[in-house]
Length: 396
Image (cartoon, rainbow, N blue to C red; front, top):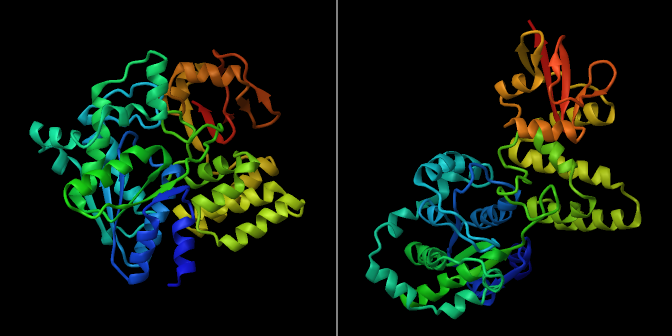
């Protein structure tokens, strides 16, 4: 590969980097690199925000480099507060075990699992002694830690910062030592943790890793995409749901999502950007192309075509999908109980919010909005819940 091609590889989906000159030197030299990414299983789902570093792993893997994927089953219990404005509670081991069950399957949607070195950081972090932790901690000062923007804000606001939080960067940093990482990929919010890896590697006489930091993309509500806020497009979302979520994004996010969350050619993305700015392409059409691209990446072309067709029929032609879930209830049953029993809503509070927000419609026949949280079912009915969910309620 040429230097220009490597430059595109390193810069796409990268907001900042450290040691990039050394990294370019090693790439041009033909070194086989160990490229590390760690993710804590604090949620059972990986989302598109996580796809940015995963796609970077895919790029390196396709060039023959060794991918090292760390599932932070130990760090996940402790909790990283790099992007948090309040103390993150510790998770119990049972929650971590449950969350990590499908991580490998989700990661495998983008990278070849047979060529990945998978690690759980409890393998080495769980064996460290107080003496070793003290040795690691000696490489940093308290001033280094509290200089971070979010920690400084919390202290200025009188909020608690636990000593446990101080330990997290040491653990992520030691991960790099344990796997002998040449490159680490992470979000811009991880800067301090990523630098901790370089610091500890130097302490252990390893060459400090190069760092590539990816941007944090907005989610469905405009805030940073985060499982904590529920504003995510998940890698394991069903095709139609994934397509619909992408279509609900703000128009100004189209180009960023194409650039960071797909591997659509950059030249074609630039052409699309020009057409959008000149009014030659409607944002809806560009967004439909984006939705197709993303669904195809995770579910294949056939699923993407079906999702597009279902979206057009449902939202542009106002047709009801044919393959909707059916729930059988007794005549006169409260609608909320039927939906709770089918796990279509998580709680009565969610149901009340949907109803009060005008998000429940009877759509077989005339479109009627359900306004009473105590609505009962007296006949077979097709409902639309929110923007994308349909359910057929069948009475006995």
